[in-house]
Length: 205
Image 1 (spheres, rainbow, N blue to C red):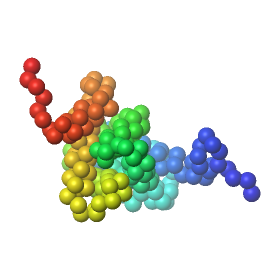
Image 2: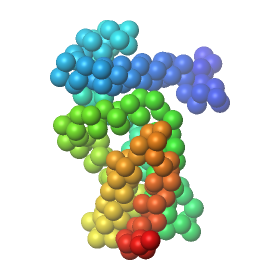
Image 3: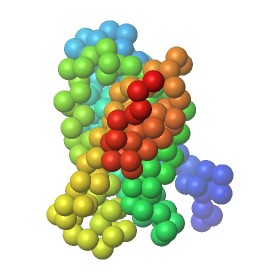
């Protein structure tokens, strides 16, 4: 049987359909959370908006919050690989910076992610529920630094580099003002430059 994959899609038709369904559920969940508030939205509401059955919903997510707060399938693994595959002459922090920039360029073009960013500002009570996803990304950074340096996961350099870089990444997203403030990538460049300069305070004007 001939494969349904194409160079343009990079995956088969069945997988593309699954990704589209997952994306539709995430978009519906985020939109409804913003419109009505997290507590007023049910799984059935999300399914109706996305045009799927509750049974289909639970093939992708265990809870309505997971539909809103989880990242795309395989994100931590892809992020880890991006850092590892950066040129060998780059320092770990440079490699992380480049991988974050690539990731943020994708995210800022994603309408659902932009809406979710606004949702989290409107409903900060949701932020603690992001702990699982945040830990997964930070662990991906740790694993990548280990792979690039040959140090152990518990090495102070590894842990500190990952923690500082990921904190800068979170600060950038928190400071971003879609459509009004500095570009997301410009903010990342500023934050990572501060890290590389040892967090020296900017000169007073």
